[in-house]
Picture: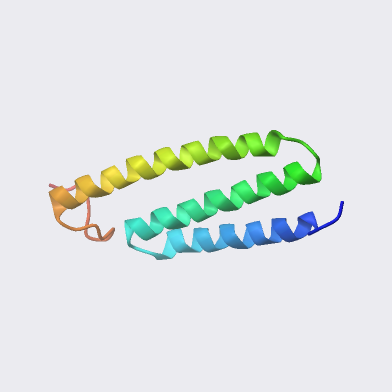
Length: 102
């Protein structure tokens, strides 16, 4: 196989996933948190594609299509929840929104 080695793709995927996890743990804005979750899902997609190419199977591409469908549903539902929270609480700051209190 010519081209970029599979290890480079896996290292890049690990770096992207780590950046996403750090973003989810540090940031307080729900839109940025959703972007970090999408970054983690794209890192997983890159791993599936790289390993599918390495082992010469189409299974990795099939998994990527399912992950993309789940990510699209997650974004649609998540943004709907954010809009509903903003309408009821008039803020989207994670620290100020507490659903357990009245």
